[in-house]
Image (cartoon, rainbow, N blue to C red; front, side, top):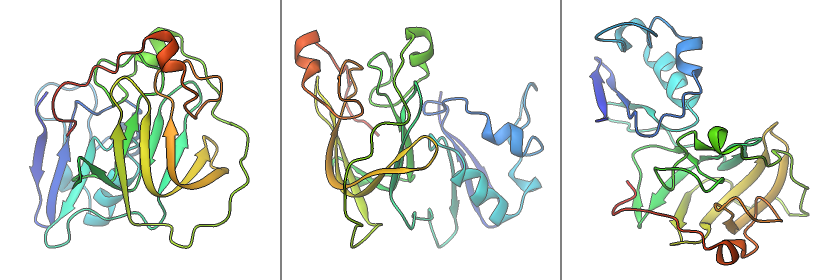
Length: 216
């Protein structure tokens, strides 16, 4: 599915169906802008203000929705966060860099069950796979970060974990901070006994990450 782009007087609303995890935040909060269950055109940014379009984009956990305001680009988070979803993916919100380049969006949902067909992104396969993992892992002792924003480099290691480098607050699904870090290796094979952290289980189970070409 190609990215859809819809122009307004103030900017461009983009929708990338390849990254959508169907959280339905958009159709539940603004069914006049993202109109469900219709044939033909279903996205109508002209029905919302610029601030409302920014809010819609900010509330999309996967980054499938972006709003790029003319002359300003994408709004960067004031605090970089990684939320750990119960029985589901990692939700990353930061100034994301992949392969040394800045992504156009600041949000991604990343697979941690090992079953996605669109690595490293979540595609909802955790449900069919019956993946279970807590969204409330144990709190690690950590000091407040001197800087809470800035770039976060995402490096999916082939047949291994996700490596994140940069200022990052790791949060439980309910929002509680469980760790603060500048470098972390996250399990994405689904087999770690120390979730969300990698413990080397990917080697024992022969995990294959399956990335094909560019991750962008």
